[in-house]
Length: 380
Ligand SMILES: [Zn+2]
Image 1 (cartoon, helix red, strand yellow):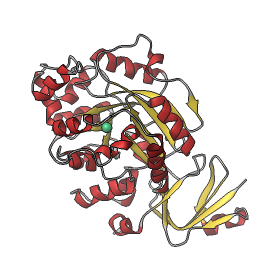
Image 2 (image 1 turned 30 degrees about the vertical axis):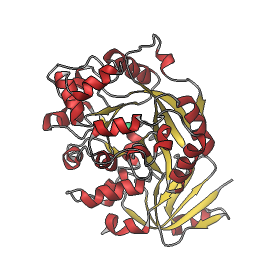
Image 3 (image 1 turned 90 degrees about the vertical axis):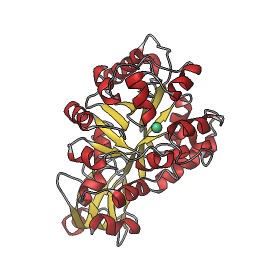
Image 4 (image 1 turned 45 degrees about the vertical axis):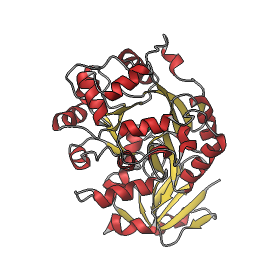
């Protein structure tokens, strides 16, 4: 059945379109059929019109990096002390004993704030979390994250092949220091064979720098003790350069964090077409510093945002992630570019731009409303 949505303003992110005043779209259950100004399309509008009033609507938001598996660890980790103290505090909890009700509650709050798709990372519970995401109505990639040395023989064993109306499972590597190099390459290959993106935490903190370059340090010792230290060290390379040497950086890879990247690392990411997911509030929460946002964005890298888990953030609200960044970033970002960080760019990075990322015919009929608190920040 056809319906019409009307709003005072929209940023559709179609091509170079800016702000459209007196916007309307006609849609059915599965897709947008037509967009334009109300005066352009009102003659064809169905009887069922929802007028949202004096608001700006944008494409449904995408959270490009979250760990719903850690929903029960809210408020149970240390803040601002760096990565290793944070990991120790994380692991002092029953890390993978998920609580379905808390995951469903987190999903409800994400949907409530306008997020319609998420790239979730799960180490031990990816099949169950995919079911919970499916039940909630969230679109998703349920990334099954591999940690350690174990290498399954077949790509198909990396993640369940079951598909959902709005989601699929895929494979992800945890990080260069904790996932065996052969495993990382095999995961990347399996995702590519299934035409899906690959995700990995990359260049997040100084512990990673030290392990990849020298194979040493207290964090390396800790990983070794747990049987999780990957054979990545003592190469004298930066994490990005080492990842490049594994041939896993390309336009279907999502490199998450990229806090500690040099000019030459940024060039590698840009030249290979690698997508970068920044997690500004998570990096701040843990005390890892701030990624060179301006250099990354100015280099032309397709950049998007994720909240990371509630164990390293205050909420899973993408508007809050964007607001935090816009208040600190030192370059002027036009509203379309800023909004693309949580919509269009994320859709491209996750290879879902056929269905998400802009308000235009053929895409899913999902949108978000710009909170009043962000109107000035975006459109001033
Ligand atoms: Zn993460």
